[in-house]
Length: 154
Image 1 (cartoon, rainbow, N blue to C red):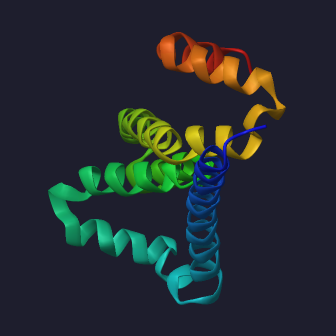
Image 2: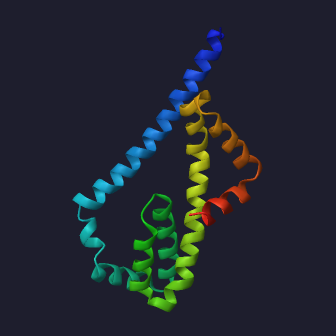
Image 3: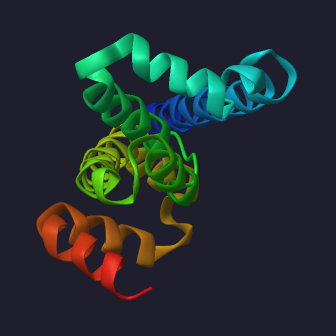
């Protein structure tokens, strides 16, 4: 029989993990709703984006990299961002920018997953799936190797 304090602590961790996942889900859903049902779609037209580029002037490329990396970390498809970069900066000019977007966005996504997802997943799954604990231990001990394998295998 488990101690009541252990059960309370486990329940508290599970509740906190579910709350984090819920907040992340609400954020993503909110972004989708804002993009679909507000004037944001008009703002994202080619003409509007060209005007924004002119307004940013020499800071257009760093602004694009920053915004796209954040969007990539928030699960906006990378292909769409790559095409956007090519449309704004030309095929050749967008190549190094899109590379930076991929690296920074990947890092931000990984950091977000480490902050929110890893512990939340373990709490939600719990002891019901021993493989999750083994994978979490492997990721903790050999993070670079695990990410390298995850990127190469698909």
